[in-house]
Length: 282
Image 1 (cartoon, rainbow, N blue to C red):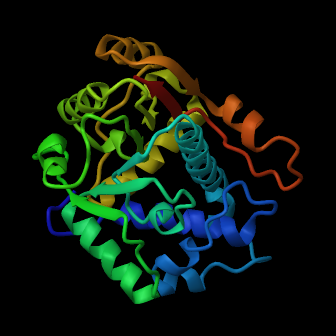
Image 2 (cartoon, one colour; image 1 turned 90 degrees about the vertical axis):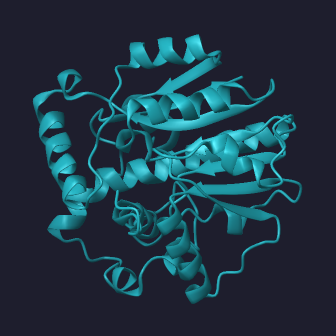
């Protein structure tokens, strides 16, 4: 992405989370602040009971965004119960967890591209959403800067366990940036962990999924943020184990739907196997 331009895809993801609050019942993921942080013109287009062609096409994508966000916060809840007190949101975009944080003792670090983070702070101020005093904003360009060096200038405690969420980021990275960030996470003390998603290569997709991936790839490329990085599940698992992670949980479409979309009458489901969710422990 461009150095001085905020992420356009981050806003689109936030719009899907906001749409979920209005269009889907029961909600998989509750995020009332998502309706306030998105751009006003985007909010004005979200109308319950009005389903146009675009909304039908994006329903599965909206389901994935809701499931992914709910899953990451579910995994964080488990980590907090196990004693984690540091939470790092890598590539935070317009995620609102830091302003909804229900855990008084949890220190939250939002790590993101400088331009996107500056834009987010403007959106929070414009929407009148207060930032809790325990939140730290850490600007980092993952392709150029060390996460360790950026965090060294904050109150982050590298000698204490931490939990990381890295959603909607890895497909846009080079392999080197992915490797360096994951090895930083893997070097944290025992009890640490990470929840992230990754994209599946088109060679492992069926024809319908391939068409969907090609359309989405063109969409993000036109936004100046092309996909670069894909992993076969077996390759991803091998790399994580080699780095020192263990207790891997990898969710595909069927597992996501069974956990979060079962029994719904509105047809809200994740369709296709374009991406998977992984939770890995140290």
